[in-house]
Image 1 (cartoon, rainbow, N blue to C red):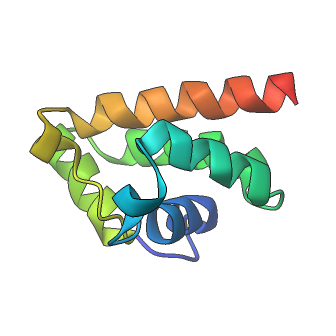
Image 2 (tube, one colour):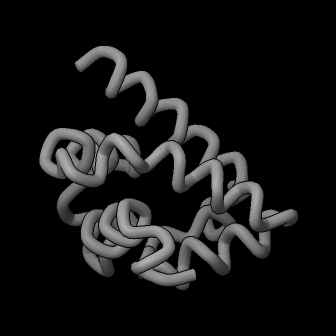
Length: 101
């Protein structure tokens, strides 16, 4: 997983869910909202990249490794979550934001 393959995910995960993301956002959906507002180049392709990532991983552990490999400091399992489910939720929210905008 790399920036060239997943530029939108790399930007969202690395720049918005960075090491100190919790100082900037109450939760990951707030970070996503900021991303969707401030990244007009990447926002439209985020859902497609999430689909690609979900199709290229078959377990929550693989998905979480990909999330971390793309620069995220948010760790779904550390909060009792499943990385694949979290990605699906982010995809739904991103898609709804684009439709509303």
